[in-house]
Length: 325
Image 1 (spheres, rainbow, N blue to C red):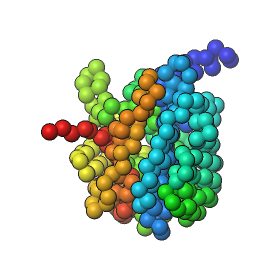
Image 2: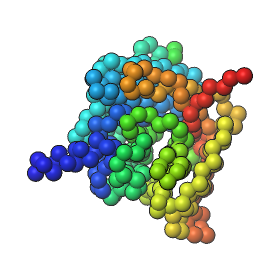
Image 3: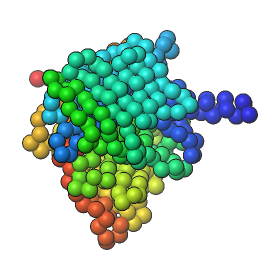
């Protein structure tokens, strides 16, 4: 039924997704963001790749960046021509980045290259709703978020500064975020690297202006023992507190509760990463992201502890604010 398909396409162009939809497909909004994170606990290494496809109306362009710890590499480029795939997961930014569900290739020049094949993928389970829960169905939100890959085996390597390093011992995580533009205010975190390599946690939140006032929702996802727990408003009660170098999150839904404590600890200064300015074909340094922060995770069901552990290779992010005086 072509008319129904047109209605669904128009609905998705608001940023929203129907129940049992695929949020990884491009929506046709102003900005489609793609993010990958590789964690090698044995080497103490983290590599992140981001790609933001912007659609200002006169041709799509991309912002591509790569950063790594402990190598200290941060490299970014604006790519004038790019495309995001609408019928499945996929993105291309000129010759700089190509990605499918199974493969990622990035070439930002000497010292900032990566190729990885992702296998044994632990993708988001087939459920009615994605990482945001019921909020994914609300049209016109400023920002949407979905962690679609909660773990994968990696085969590949990266050129980081003057070294080529293997990624074969790393695990992979990937997510999408999208909306009319990049978020004005947010907090975010993700971690592998626990004593149990199958554990993954990710969270995202921020201030949102609604007709009833300003709210600050946060969604948290935990992969644990073959299960995926999602706690997101309005079904879950979440409270977040974010400071200069601290991220604290409490979430409860039914008998399940999740506690997250994130901090910079003694780690090096955070990486300043770019975000796209959709209509201006340029980027600004607005993301302050710790590539290897400390994250303490506890998951409980009623009075029983399901898991407690610490990762020293967590990604922890908030906006970078210029300070004067």
